[in-house]
Length: 260
Image (cartoon, rainbow, N blue to C red):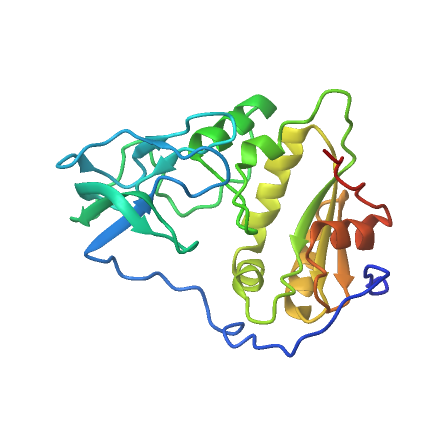
């Protein structure tokens, strides 16, 4: 283990309330109805492809992205579309949503439901990026930025590292911690997919030092990947912010956004 890294200025260590860190990930039972907002990402809301009384299946595309900064939305349940109307989301504002009455558990035929891990990557860089865009994958850090945009390298720019944020410095959150413990190999395969999509080789993974079990698992797995480096980071907020994380792992600084 190398010495613990961190960013050079500021930071606090709030009292931790990681009350769910030892609780395994669980599958919830299906509700009677679900409300699926058409705006689950930064940018333009998706446009509904279904109407009331339509039957839908799990994994079915029910709303299509309306621009580059937008994301497709798929149904998480099977059943009947009851209505499309505004519902209150996490922002506290009402936004259009597809309300589905849950009926059974029918999946799209194209969905691979096998549980075996697929380690071989045969898709090309463009195929991986296209699949990410079609799947409507977005970030979960707060802005829910469409992931296909993050993989679009600006002209004239060169990438050197893929940085994986395993910090989770907020005092209550434990979902990343549990994923690192229970889905470590899947995460490493995901890293290989992203490296191929981006056309680079090097990965830096930062994990706060209050997750020693996750660090141990990742260090063991990283022995099979010569270009993946694991770094223990000092436990302090906001270690997981992109500016702080980049500074801690690379000693470089993200330049401020241009004014105007």
